Image 1 (cartoon, rainbow, N blue to C red):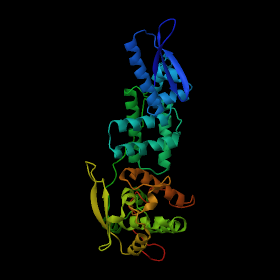
Image 2 (image 1 turned 60 degrees about the horizontal axis):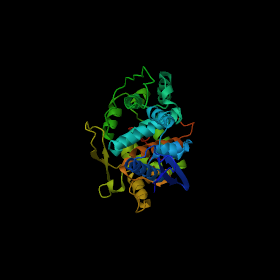
Image 3 (image 1 turned 135 degrees about the vertical axis):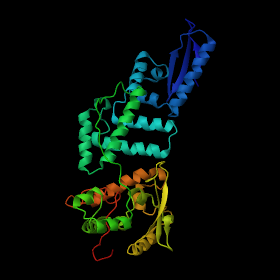
Image 4 (image 1 turned 180 degrees about the vertical axis):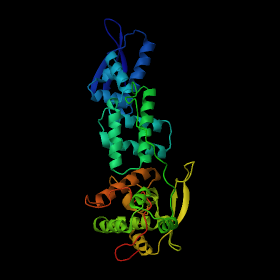
Amino acid sequence: MASIYKHPKSGILHVSFRYEGIQYGKSLRTRDNRKAEKLARATQQALNALKNGRDKEGLKLIRKGFSVVEVVFPTAEVKRYIEEGERIPATLRELHDRWIEHLKNEGRADTTVASAKYRLVHFMRRFGDEFSVDHLTRQDLDQYVAGRRTQVIAEYTIGREISALRGIINKAVEFEWLAANPVKAWPKLKAESRKEFLPKEHVDELIATTQLTDEDLRSRMLLAAADTAELVTLAEEKLPELVLPIALVAVTGIRRGEVVSAKRTDVNRKKWTLTVASDKGSRKRTQVRRTIEIHQSVIPLMKQHLATLKASDKLLFPVFGQINGWKRDADKDSHARRDRAARLLIDVLPKSCSIRNERILLDSVIRPGLWPGGRI
């Protein structure tokens, strides 16, 4: 406990306290006992926060070389350091962490926080965690857009990512984390909103009644039968757990978010249907549930797959829930599971593969076609 003692000559009151086995003392510059007791209580509260890890800023200062006394009784130098640190997040990682913490402190929904993480992570992958936000330029953003386009990412998605970063930086200026917006002119991408979901029967009709070119198929994010067969063959060789998801996408057009979030209880074994939830098509972003009929050629695979699931498996496809060595079945981790789905497909596809777009498998409507051996 912090204790008060009087200097024998001057009568000035001092406070004495211990931190991590070391004794410290500090003049309170007063002879008023009541004021000294108040300062001693504040000192003890600061020490408790440091010992319990609640004062993260104080611990950061100590790791930077500032003494415990300077942290508990901030000098002008410490105050200036804290003020500069609060105003300017030096790196992209610090801006990311501070923004996520701000959303949590505001009580935002877990889905909102997860969405912010999902959009910001692409910038950190491109620029690096230690990239200085203050040095961000229009040229950096143009290079980012060009890089995402080479990955065949939809213009709509890239535009949402750019808008998200711009909004966060504007808020950072408002909160005085940044002195000013480093980018004067931001890229403006003109893109149509995502096309309406096409069920299997509509895809069949579209293909049968319309002379679609390869470019049309790519714009609709459809795969030819040969591409579907190639995906299945690659999955069978490298990651058999992806074969059934590919089959479902190929014959139903189920979306990526619906695949990775599907639960084993969503499968009706009597009618062989799959009930999925999505927020697509809802202006209020509320989930819309729909029932998909499992194609007869996929039912044998589904039976085999269900027999391999453990009693503890909640997800229909646990392979998408194995994130960083942990099983994550909670809805709030859906973005992480989608990211893992894309990564798994990247690992499966060799550089020589004709299918270049890793989003095609689990983020698109795939044209129904024949597998090798005529299984579908």
